[in-house]
Length: 460
Image 1: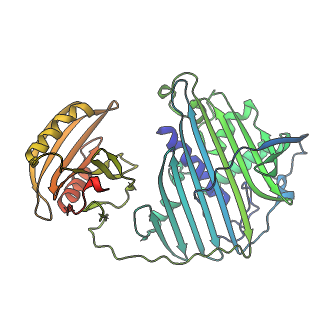
Image 2: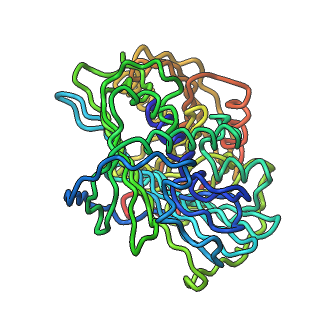
Image 3: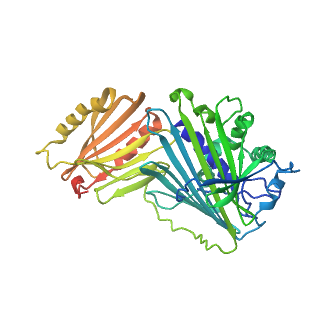
């Protein structure tokens, strides 16, 4: 997970660079859309297969007087009424005798001058999509919509966080531009191959070994240039009709190349990062960005309601948490939805189990069976307490507090068990500690949940 955080932050920093605005000559990789707002973007885009065919090789060009001159012959229009940037980043960690650890970050940004902007970000792993986040900004107002949530207004602070996962890198404008300038300075001294890349002509620059560590710093993929890691970096500038329409960056090497904790990976592990960006600028791209419809939310401040009519329950969850709601059926028991906090790794799982085959089982007996099963899923499990709670809709429920370990990490958990109709509902809140914030969330979630039992888990 550490390497994922580093890579996602670094790639987003590159995305921020692609859509900046300035009165000074641009030194970013990609077009500067006139007076467009300084924004970047993240959508799912079709996976672009590798297609690199060497055409010819060119000697290193004479060093330009400025890095901007390096791209003079492929400069975009100075201004455009609208623009679109699509980016896809693929990450793969390959270790001997292990399944590859991989994920994809896809982004789409669109803007209309003078003050309308939209971005869509999707993070996906093999077999499922982590979530999609859409942001719309019109003038001084902004809104966001995440998977499973309604449109919500954004504060200024939330807008900055939503538009840039790289905020924690604390790179100010001057530092970012200095990094870009230095990177282009490196490229300006290198020979390039003219290749076909994703159906268009491109220049390929291979960063030499002696400049590898420094280039990683400039790309935002490593915090220092002290690394003696092994690897390669290829930079591709893609053109069409003498215009720059995108760039690709391919990175491959050992885990410490990207400042990943080497101890977490076995010998022979390799990390690969493929980043591709594509641009469109013009006065009539058919882009429409309208103000979204924001519903009124009836929930305590900081929380949102989640309603499942199909499985007959309603719960509150902390507003910043993400939602994964692809139900999985374990032969009568269904994990309906998972809410999770990326900052603390706390999570809430709501499950439903069909009781019609249990022959009149009582809630007390069900709780006993549940506790007996803890040892099969939790290492060194200890039941701290069992207490009775009356739910918001007047049902008797058990709350079980336990602690133990999972995958070598300490965990603290609480489960709410309640019957409604012919179903058992199990709310499981798990965290790495037992903080005041966790206890506040548990009280709010468990104390406000309601259950109807109108649809059995076995009926889907």
